[in-house]
Image (cartoon, rainbow, N blue to C red; front, side, top):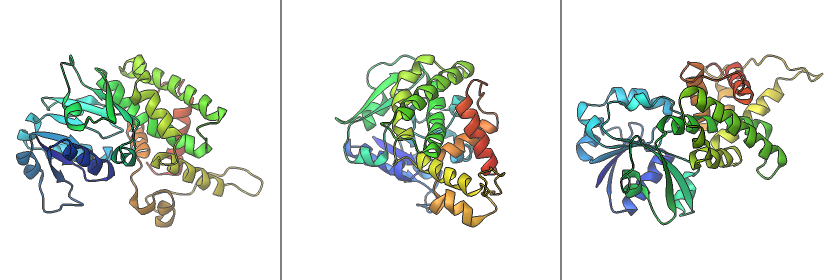
Length: 299
């Protein structure tokens, strides 16, 4: 099968490696990496599409799609999207999420992800055919909305875990994850997801991995955010309002976003603050980190 991969970042390139190992051909589209290629080129080449762009780039990407693109079966690996209707024009869509860093997948470590797809699962899904290996497995659910929500939430909770410098074997981390998953269930309930989706790899598995790993960009961002907050404290330990506005101060922006790193937890926070997800009052951890991100970074 010919697979067009939209997004040639770390995860997109990793998906390309797996797709080719399974005997398929790939064609990448990413203006930053392949400026000579167009969206029409990749669609003309492809039998199926896989999207791995940052969530902040998704709407712009889809707005440039020719009608022929919507007829191709689509796999979405982008994290931090909350509204499934963004893909309503596509004939067939599968959302892939769950605990797995790109480096672990390439190295052949055992990883289990979640496939979310509307309707009845009959036989192997497209994601299983293109991405499944002896070490890369999947669980499945019809809860597309819930899996999309969880894929964004875990990155925001990872920021707070990093800010607190929690370690995965500590009692504090275990209590944090327990509370975060309870909050996630409440958020799913208010926003049309399935409560049981928290038990999937896209739920508890992803929360534990992303919130407890130094490999997580969001966790590392949280650590830098905590260090920035400490730098704002006065001599007597009083916390003064942050003066940093990320889009105005290049030096401090580089501190939080080294080398232009994409922090999906920040993108997800922006989406929530725009009103794309309802956050109930009971979600105290999420509400607090949203306030901190909004306060310290101009969103």
